Image 1 (cartoon, rainbow, N blue to C red):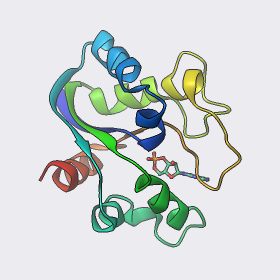
Image 2: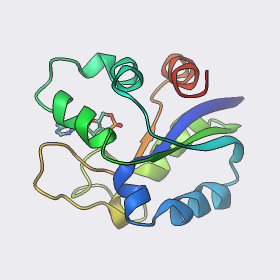
Image 3: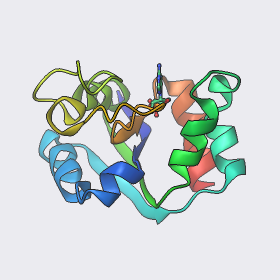
Image 4: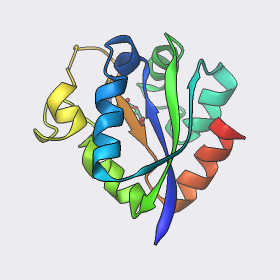
Length: 137
Ligand code: CMP
């Protein structure tokens, strides 16, 4: 069934000039851009978005990283797009993400406290609804 998901091109992706490449993969796969905007989220937006990670060792560095520059937020639609975008993105750790995925092809492990893994995609319909309301109101 058609569903929607939140995709973020994170600050590392925007800063490295990979937004167009990432959008190209999304469009080539056939997903529809419903809304897209450049955003500089404040701490409240990020605390809401990453509530499930509060207290983890990478939480504070993650918030700082996400405030280090603009991200591109995308409302993306398509059949099984939640699962499909996560497949395009690859696994969280860019070092071991499969080649052919966004993280596998372009992600770098900088030896930092946060995986700067270029993109985010909602992990379930519940997360997608929650995250879309946080980023798009
Ligand atoms: P994302 O899918 O946006 O959701 C949580 C983010 O936290 C994740 O991408 C990574 O950027 C980061 N992250 C998750 N797990 C770890 C980890 N074990 N070490 C460092 N960063 C992590």
